[in-house]
Length: 508
Image 1 (spheres, rainbow, N blue to C red):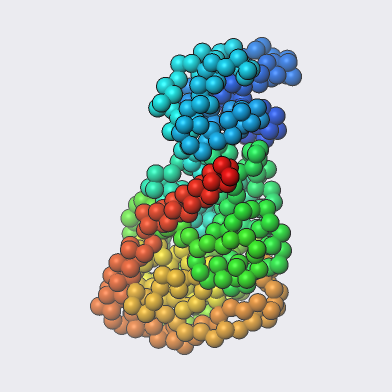
Image 2 (cartoon, one colour; image 1 turned 45 degrees about the vertical axis):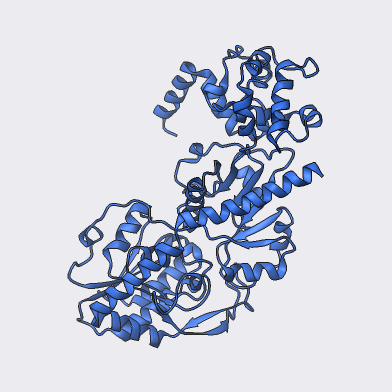
C-alpha cells in the first residue's frame, strides 16, 4: 500500500470512526464470531464498549448502524434472532410463518422477559409489525465464491448471482481470495451469512476447507443449509472429494456430465443446475486493437494455462490448423492464454508447436473480461479441441455472439451443443496415461480427431454462408437454453423446496 493510501485511510477513520469500525468488523471473522449481532441495534452498544475497552479508544457513539450497513429492520431482527438462543427457544417458528414472526416482534417490543440494549426496546416498539413480519421470512441466499479471481469460476458465480436476482432472490455476497493477483475488490463483497441457505461456489481443492477463512467470514451459528457448487472435467471424481461433500447438505453442478461422476461417489443429493450464461457488456473493438489483420479469416481459442494445457489441447488445435491451411492463405489462428510464466515448460511446448508461423498468434496476457469478449467478437469462428470440459463456457459465449463453433463432441458442452447448432468433432475415449495433477493417470478423456477438425475448419473458411448459418443457429439455441432467466427460475424452485422442507421439519 502506498504512503498516500495509508494517510487517506487514517483521514477516513478520523472523519467517520463508526464507518471504519463497521468495515473492520465485516472483515474480522473473530469479531463476527464473538459479536454476531454487532451491526444491529441489539448488539452495537456491547460491541462498541468492548472495542473501547480492548483497544483503549473513546467509546464510539451509539448511533444506529442500520444507516451504515444493515438498513433493513428485518435483517437486523433476523440477525438478532440467530445470535440469541433465548429468542429461538421462546419463538422457535419465528422465521417459518407470518403469525409466529409477528409474535416475535411483539414480544421484543413489550416483554420484560427479554433483556435488550436500552436503545433497542423503543426501536422495536416503533416497528410496523404487520409490514415487517412477512419480511422476516424472506431470508435470501448467501453466496461465497471467487468474485475477484479472473477465471471461469468468477464468470460462473457472477452469472449465478445475476440469475438469482432476476428470480427475485436476495443475495449476500462474499469473495474468496486466491492470491495477490486477484482483482483488488475483495472489500466490495462484504455480505454476512444473513440467509438460511449458503451456496459455496468454491472448488473442493485447494480452497474449499478454508473458504470461510479466505472470505474473512465467520460461520453462522446455528449453521446454515449448505450447498456446494462444483465443476469437474471428468465423469469420475477424486475420492478425496467425498470428505468435502460431507461438510454440505447437497451439491449442485452445471451439467449432467459432471453430475454423473458426482452421483457415483457422493452420498449427498446432487442436482444439475446450470448457472446461466449471458454476455457481459463489452466494447466492440476492431482487430487492429489486438494487432490482428482485418483481412484474414480468424479462428480463436481462449484458455488459462492454470486450467491444464493438456486438457485444453491447444497443441491438437495447432496440428489441425496446419493440416487445414497451407502457408500464404489469408487465415489466422489466435490462441489467447494467460499465466504462461507460471508454466514455462508447457508454454515453451506451445511456442514450439506454433513453429514461428506468422499465421498462428499466441497472446499470453491477462486481459480484462471486456477485452476478452471484444477479442472473441472480432474473430470469425471459435474452435475448442478440448479433451474434456466441465461446462465449456467460452463455447457458450461464442454461440451467444453468433460465432460458428467447432468443438469436441464430448463432456459438459454437449449439454447445449448438437449437430444443428455447432460443428462437432468426433473422438476416441482414451486414458490420460500419466499423472497430470490434479488428474490421475487412469482417468479417461477424449482424443478428438485432428483430421476431422481440419476438415471442419477448412469448410467454414471456404463457405462463408455455412459459417453464417451455423452461427445464427447457435445463437438462437443458446439464447433459448442458456438464459439467466431460465437458470434463475430453476435455482429458485430448488431453493423454495429446501425452505419448505426446512420449515416443515422445524414444525414437526
